[in-house]
Length: 275
Image (cartoon, rainbow, N blue to C red; front, side, top):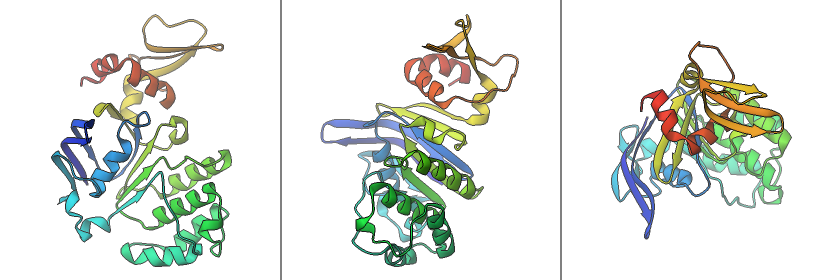
């Protein structure tokens, strides 16, 4: 669906990507992780054709992204982190954009708004930031595009709204969709994503499915630091560690601990996953 090959991009003299290669395929919900300012939003804009690579290729559905072919654009929806909404009712907003998306489902939109407790007659400009964000999340899901790019979707949401977000996201995943969720709030996508992709300083640090991670690594808590730990995070409760899963013992993948390990000891993980 999405193919990124040797992507180079910079803002003036500030280099963002220097040879990034990456694919996003259908049937997966990706967690695109990285620090703020590491290029996640820039990557999304390159995929949608809103930015042009200085070098390399970005293709979506076989089309060069920057050409912005209508047959590509109606299959992709980008939910940006920062947005402006017009002073119109929610229903008027959805009615004006729906014709651009052939598989848009108005019934689904109304159902998701009900889940988020947002009336169709509300005026967008008079709602709180969290309500606006939930409205846009509901609309983005209702477009039923083949690719959905969500840039920091949980920013601005309170705790209960984040619970609602996870609930609706779990209900819409499917084999024919590719959903990429960009975030630095790792806990917000735990138990939701199928694959973890980490970028930093314009480079791909880690890209593995949750199943592959569970087979290779074991996540353990102990009062003493394990001698064979790949990575350990010490707290008042003891030690949260990642060890090589030599005995194929199933454990829950701790995304926050994994992300810390990727950022601090990437070489150790690369050995395990044979990069």
